[in-house]
Structure formats: C-alpha cells, structure tokens
Amino acid sequence: MMLHDKTILLIISGGIAAYKSLDLIRQLRKAGAQVRCIVSKGGAQFVTPMSVAALSEHEVYTDLFSLKDESEMGHIRLSREADLILVAPASANMIAKMAHGLADDLASTCILASDKPVMIVPAMNPMMWDHQATQDNIETLSDRGVRQIGPASGEMACGETGMGRMAEPEDILSAVYDFFFERPLKGKHAIVTSGPTYEAIDPVRFIGNRSSGKQGHAIACALIKAGAHVTYISGPTALPCPPGANSISVEAACEMLEAVENALPADIFIGAAAVCDWAVDNVSTQKLKKREGQSAPALTFTENPDILKTVSSHEKRPELVCGFAAETQDMNNNAKAKLLRKKCDWLVGNNVCSAQNIFGSDENEVCLFKYTDIGDQDITSQTLPRMKKEAVADFLVNEIISVFENKKDQNNEPSHTTRAAE
Ligand code: CTP
Image 1 (tube, protein in one colour):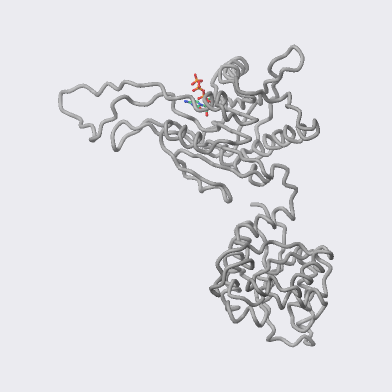
Image 2 (cartoon, rainbow, N blue to C red):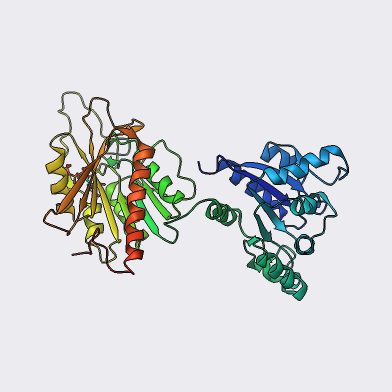
C-alpha cells in the first residue's frame, strides 16, 4: 500500500531479539517494500539465513563470503541502492563498530561504504545498554544523524529487567513510515464508521443494505497513511481490516453507536457507514416458520439511534465531524438539510442513482458540503468528477489535513471550518 517504491536494507545483528526481525520483514513486505537482508555472524546464531531469505524473497548475504570477492562488491552496492539501512536488532557490538567506523564484516562494511540514511533498533542486556561506552556510542551515532527506535524497557529474554528490549515490529514500521512520509495527522485520532449495518429479524435473517464499505475502508487507509491513529468500526463487509487500524466489527446500528462512543474522544469522526434507519421490533429468538395458509409475518420497526447526530452533539465532540449522504434525488437541497439537521461540519453527498451504480463499485461521484460561518453563505459545496474511491479518500483527507494545518497557523485559535457541540 505505502512503501511500494522503497528498498530497505535490513541488517540483522546478534541478539535473541533477532526473532522479531522475521516478523519485521513480513510487515515491511506487506507494506510493499523491497527488503534485502544481511545477517551478521552473531545474527545467524539466532535466525537462519534460510528463513530470512524465504520471508524477504531475496538472496540473503552473510559473512560466509570473502570481502575481497568480486561478488562481495556487489553486496556493498546493495547498501548504496537502498533508500534506508535498518539495523534491527542493533547489538551493542554493532553499535560500537558503527560509532568507530569499523569494517570487519559484511554488515559493518556495507554501512561504512554507504551514505544512505541509517536507522538502528538497539536490543541488548540492560547493563550493556546503560554502560557508558554504549551511551557514548549512541550519542556519537545520533550526532551523525543516525535515527534510533527504542529500546523499550521491560523484561528481557535473558531474564533481567530494564532498558534494552527491542522495539516491536509495528513501532519500527511506523517509524519507517515517519521517515519516508510527511505525516501531517500524526497524533490525531480518527474514528471511521463503514459498511452496512444488519438488523436482525430472527437468528438467520436480517435487514441490510447494499453498502460494500469500500469508501469507508479507503478513507481509513488514507488517514493511516497521513499518520492518524484510526479506529475503524465496520458493519459486515467482505473487506480485510485496513492495515494499521484498530478495527472493530459490529452488526447492528446500536452496536455501532456503542463502539463509537467507547472510542471517543477523537479529533476526527467520519460517518461513512450506511446505517439502517430502523431495527426490527421483537426480534424472534427462533427462526420464523412459514406455515401453510398463514400470511407473511408483519414486521414492525423502531427507529435506530442516529450515530452521526449523536457524535455531533456529544460532550466529547470531535473537532471535525463528517457525515455521508446517499441521495437518489435533489442532492443539493437534501444534503444541505441533512448537514444542518445532523449538526456535522462536513457532509459528503453521493448520488447513488447515477447511471453506473455506486454501490459495490470501485468509483464514486461525490459533492463535499462544508458548514461555514464565514460570509452570508452557510454551506459551501464542491462537486468532484467521478473517480476511484481511493482518490475520493485522498481528496477528503487532504481537506482534513488543511483544517488542522490552518488551525496550527492560527495559533490554536478555533477554526472557522468546524463548529463546537451545541
Ligand atoms: N447515519 C447515522 N445513524 C443513522 C443513520 C444515518 O449515523 N441511524 C449517518 C450515516 O452514517 C451518514 C449520514 O448519517 O453519515 C446520512 O445517512 P443517510 O442514510 O444518507 O441519511 P438518513 O439520516 O438515513 O436520512 P434519509 O434516509 O432520510 O436520507
């Protein structure tokens, strides 16, 4: 999804924490990166080059080669072709070699022979970490611009407790994203609802709708890419959880509301779910039977809570509340009225009766309505051409980024584009 054009040279040095590097390779690959690996002699005591090769899907380089060998020069070139050199775990010994410019094995030679950015993920015994020699080496590397992730404190594999635990693969991945991308929504919490809700009739039947959840999913992914922490609350869909989101699966509107309220506070709320307006009264605990000569069961309904409206008026109202409006006619008036009725800041209107159907499609046709208290016009609108749902998501997230950037520029003055709970 995000690291497709990036090549990372992963250097695995010695330490029990090297097992985490296998998961790290898997996560980097899943994020789209090319991963080339060097396993030091110490690293090879803890992970086998064979498993590293299988996960990275590339040849693995070890010290079994002679540095004078012509082919070895090719390996050194590897570090020059990488966009980032990641040393994980970085043992005390490897850190010392880096700080002093030693090049006595393939890993340290590659680091010394390259001017590419370097990130270290220290992992060692707490006494080794605390030792003045290590601390001096760390300072030297930091002064030289080497980035550092961790270590964390806690119980060590060696049984001791203290500083020196290797950072977790998710945290390393997040730091790699931070390195490559500007993450303007870092530190912001966004809640995204997505997909349909299912309202039960009996244990096997339900009332639902045609929402595929693709648009909400794309928005969650775009928010994660921009650095936000995303709670993704979805009704039943065929989509996988967005990588990096805190995903919560729900069925009915009431469950969705409960999950949303539990996830508050947040800075951003995006209500992309197609929430059923009604729930069936007296849901049957047994499957309703079809009986000869009897008429079809008459269902009665209760109105579901309005999640968007609840969030808009909540005491923990997010700074920016954005809803969706699926309209089949008179989009402009219906969407504007909906925005005011639900007291949200923005509303993405989508025309669901366009010639090429929107439900289940990879494309969407939307108009973004924004509440504004500037000038005499309360609501502005911007119509976008039909485009991929990912492109709609990128557009929306860029608009969100501008809100928070404007806010920063105004020195934390309240923004015109959002309004407080009433
Ligand atoms: N919504 C909600 N809770 C509901 C119904 C809708 O949070 N019980 C949210 C949707 O997630 C969406 C917005 O409200 O962000 C508009 O949904 P829509 O179905 O278009 O509007 P309704 O309120 O159902 O109005 P109508 O069906 O009359 O068009």
